[in-house]
Length: 292
Image 1 (cartoon, rainbow, N blue to C red):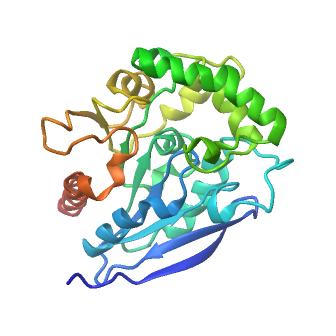
Image 2 (spheres, one colour; image 1 turned 180 degrees about the horizontal axis):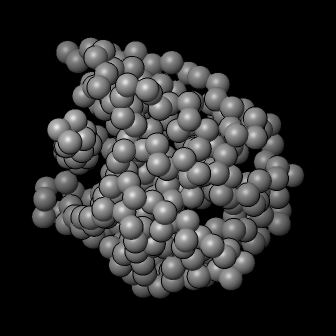
Image 3 (tube, helix red, strand yellow; image 1 turned 180 degrees about the vertical axis):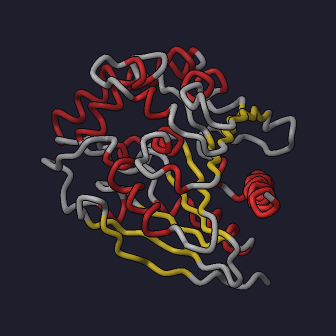
């Protein structure tokens, strides 16, 4: 029987002192640190199995709930003010500062939004390697036709009606994840109008220059059956990491015996082989660093 992983719930202050809830998973003999940057509206508990697996491989692993989500949510989202990118600028940036270690390298896993967030971090230079799953540009035009119809119905009909009534996006009522603050909904909806997401938004100048500052090794994996972030969508967004040692991996999950992965299956137990490949990549980077 596999021994349980010791974990601890932590209170983590964002850079503006907003209180966040995080969980640390302890390796018995750690050789590296790992931070998981989750997707929009996905609570940290979704990444628990991956985090425990990484801890068994020697990675002290940290997960967190962004402000407005999961255990970092206020009593009500109605009237809760925040910027979507606060999750990167303030929440994840604080997690990097808190989780880095003087004697061990820090690596980072992204899921969907997590791949957007990395290039926005003021301290991305503290991360020795970044691997992201299911990151894409969000534009409906990259999606299969049937998914385009569903997504456009969400942005043009369901979302406006729901937010007008609730004061936030009641995402959970649609079975899509956690409810989302109004600021997240409004900016997400706006950026999904553009083929290259917020890089094409005239109200968001300077983002491409910020992403160009990233020189950390980056890998982005997307499956062919990821309807929200197919490989073309990934390529449109990840092109912004122009100065990072970058590799894209496209996975035919059916052909490789993983079944349906979609947008969320990267972190389900059936995808454990992908977890090991990712951790192997981090360990390869670590070995190269030690040999240099």
